[in-house]
Length: 82
Image (tube, rainbow, N blue to C red; front, side, top):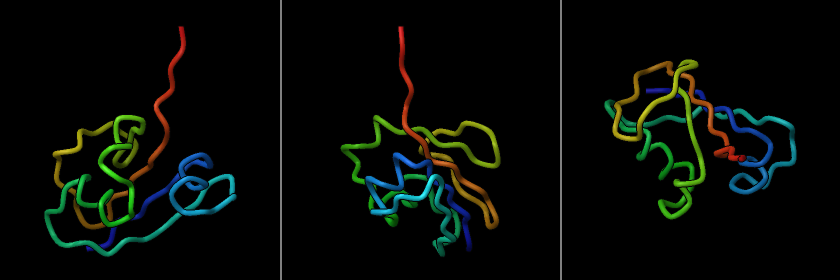
């Protein structure tokens, strides 16, 4: 199945070596794959996943949820403040 992935600038620079403001990929992945499997395939190490968030089709999702063909995933850094 095909998943569209959008990266913010910070994530694209770190994991894709890309300096564009936003970067997009279409990733071919096996049916019923989870977001964790997608992140593995993209090359985002498990040790870095605490510092990123993601949405599926505009809604926040958990990493154990299954992806569906045509899903649009956005990956961005966790924002904090105080």
